[in-house]
Amino acid sequence: MDAGGRALNQSAMLAYLRSVTLLREKVPSFDQYPFHLPAVSAMDGLDFHPKVTYIVGENGMGKSTLLEAIATALGFNPEGGTMNFSFATEETHSKLHEYIRTVRGVRKPRDGFFFRAESYYNVATNIDRLDAEGSFGPPIKESYGGKSLHQQSHGESFFSTFLHRFSGNGLYIMDEPEAALSPYRQLALLRRIHDLVQEDSQFIISTHSPIVMAYPDSIIYNLTNEGVERSTLEQTDHYMITKQFVNNREAILRELLADDEE
Image 1 (tube, rainbow, N blue to C red):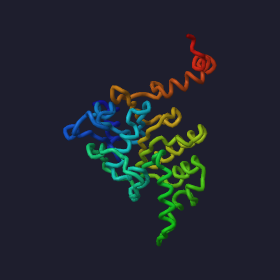
Image 2: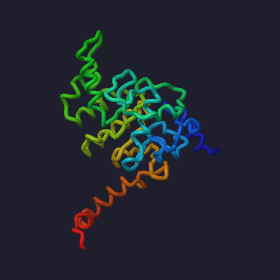
Image 3: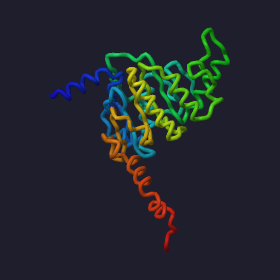
Image 4: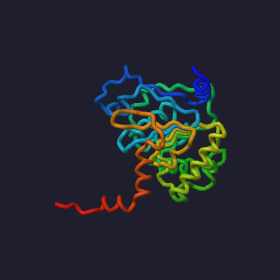
């Protein structure tokens, strides 16, 4: 092994989550959901970058299902939040987490959060409910900037979490964090990720945004109909389509909006 390979292995040892493995021998049937998804059926395992790992792909490829399974296997609430959150609005998560093995690093994170854009309303509601019940400690919302997440815009509530609740030395799993963010805020999120990486944090992120997936010290896994493949930012459809549209907007719009000729 060369020096570069040794350095990469030593760096991987510092990751809080090093890898996950699909326990294929225990899968009841690869014809059933979620095991029939190409990203699952073709997967043996995934190795994670100690800083940032991206899971990208077209809708329906299983990104959210895979991220949910990883988070749930680690002990996070399937709907999101910290490991202390135990609410359940509706049991819709798959059983995939029961069939994967997590390989953790030698260090344990001091912080952690599973951020799901689609169910973050439920997390905010749970925080308000717990604060209304009262406790001997400060209100939970103080960890999110001191203001109810429901009293902020969708994007503001997202960013309050990234800015205030994510405190460093943590493992952060994020499913489409750009969903409510403007391009400017996506750039700010990228900077926030960098600041937290500098504070010994690790991220696993599912995203459609070429901005969010641009962190340089990272791995990108692209989920396709054939399975899972390593990719670069420039090789992703997200980047290529966005670049092509920005550079050739008028021509693309003419073709896209042209009436069909019979």
